[in-house]
Image 1 (cartoon, rainbow, N blue to C red):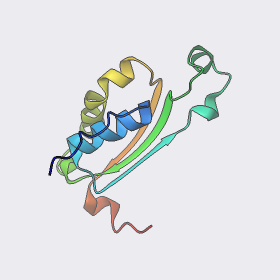
Image 2: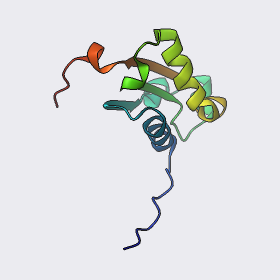
Image 3: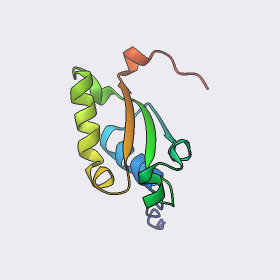
Image 4: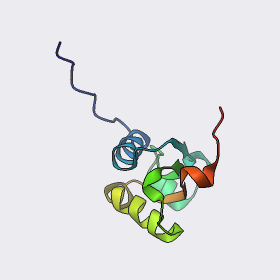
Length: 105
């Protein structure tokens, strides 16, 4: 049976999630939009729709053998379009499954 195509990601957070998931196949991915914490700042006034400041925590086997800086560079490369446009700030914590340990909800 034919499945309808997946819907395109709508907002910046959705695009970030889709791109990081496609590239790194994470065991764990948390993305928090912290734009509301920067209300009143110059960039927030220029982008009243929000979605400009994000915190990302990602755990993926793709980071095994990479330094902290190399991991962040890979993430920034994947999100280059967002960082060149609506995303003003991105805080990243990238770990391997062994570094993260067991994840419980």
